[in-house]
Length: 149
Image (cartoon, rainbow, N blue to C red; front, side, top):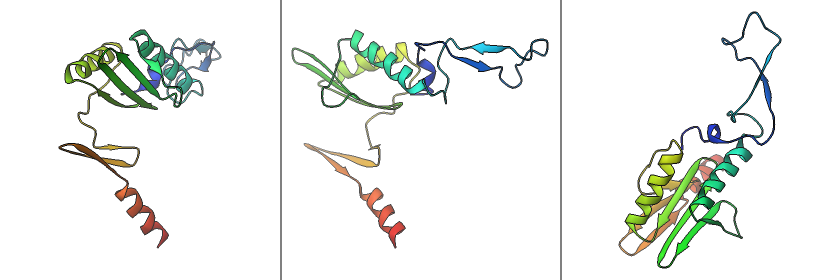
């Protein structure tokens, strides 16, 4: 997701100094009141998560009790799992049609790019085989072994 934190809605009043290059020379001591979250703002991650979670819940997802970054949609035989890590999303569904519907809904609400099938996430390599999925941290292990040598 591109610039995810910019999608966050602030729940409190936040002021910042006038940005360099945009300062009003007639009012140099004035500050700006933020209407939306900014990257680097300490409230940004919380505001982004709250906005994203609220949207998913409006689509019928629920937060997993075991992990607040995992959201589950389940209706009859349809199931979707969405894992959110800061501004990266891993998404899987019980059918391609359902997967495309969820992606379309997300793209309609947020500026995002679909990177296709999962190959790598948080240091874990993902390889799909006919009837299985292999998860590996070979690169991570190799890197750390070299660092120790």
